[in-house]
Amino acid sequence: MTQPEINFADALREVAQARNINELQLIEAFEQSLAQAYTRNVEPDKRIEVHLDPQSGELEVLVVREVVEKVEDEHLQISLADALELDPGVEIGMEMEFPVDREKFSRIALQAAKQTLTQKMRETERNVVFNEYKDREGQVLTAQVVRSDNKGNWFVELGAGEAILPPREQIPGEKLTPGNRVKIYLKEVRKTPKGPTILASRADERLLDYLLKQEIPEVANGIVEVKAISREAGQRSKVAVFSHNNNVDPIGACIGHRGNRIQAVTGELGRERVDVILWDANTREFIRNALSPAKVGLIEVQPERREATVTVTPDQLSLAIGKGGQNVRLAAKLTGFKIDLRETAAIQDLDAAMQQAMLDEQDGKDASDTAKSAFDALFKDSKSVATASPDDTQE
Image (cartoon, rainbow, N blue to C red; front, side, top):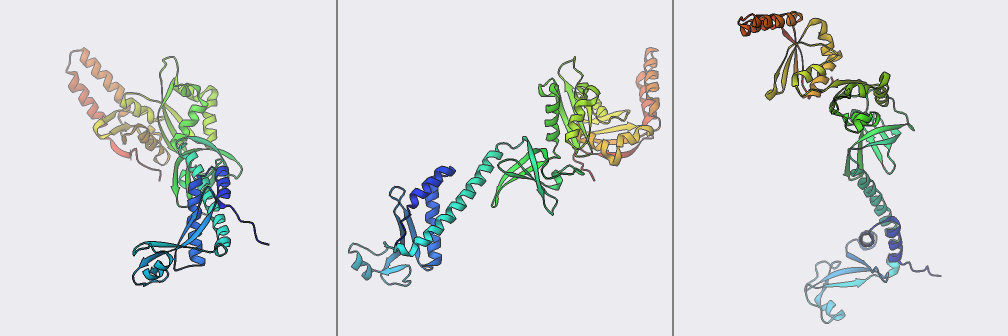
């Protein structure tokens, strides 16, 4: 009893519709797959072409040979004399097609169809994942932790695809557990030969920006604007905020009653410390605020070089620098200025010097010279003790 003939066109059409694959592309892929399989397994030295009629379902496997005067390769050529016996109208340079007996390729066709469908479905699934998440780059998503590998990478399930959290995008010290759900920032989606690669981050500053909008209504509705963020994930961040409503305290709005709002934010980041400071259009004041909780003195700014020299007393020096230079480093990133901290022992007399200069002016004395000499006296013994640039990274 012979096996019933398979209509490959109908079979491919059904799969194409079910999997949302282009039917003609699927048929073309099947033809190529069958031609390669037949050449490899049956006629390794011959030129093979396959044609599948989408309407009738008729399948042909053809051996193609070129008509030549003198045959040099009998697998690829046929002599003019032999060709004329088969077709009196043939000429040199033309190609002739010789159908292959169906029994020779039926089994191979089944294997080729299976291979084509498997490959195309895999490609389609990859394209679906890429197209879905490529449009979501820059968003924050909730993902489920799945597994880790021996390189320190963690993988999270997004739904239709899996994203990778490499060590540099993780929060240092955070313990991830398979099955737990975490928020991730979708940083990049790119195509690779093995399929789409989705890069996720828990260390990106934009994750913190998202959480602030989620937990603080005034930030979400634009009353309070987040002007800048600098972050060293898992340890400490600085957030510069500004209120567009004079009746709203931007820092108080972000902190919340008894710190409930900022605690909700830090809770999602493994208890990372978040300092909220006031943004100021005046560069000097912004740098002063950014260096808090340290109280600093004179700030000299060179806007064109994006550099600032900040004088600080010994009792405030450690606060200004911070542990491992973290405070001044975050302040530099936040403001976009290179900050040079200079220590002086006389800065506590600044207010007195300024007050004396004002009194001299009121008395009609040459206040400019008095003020200048007072300032020179205050800062002449200062020395540079720490420098941080906006692009500095944690050691």
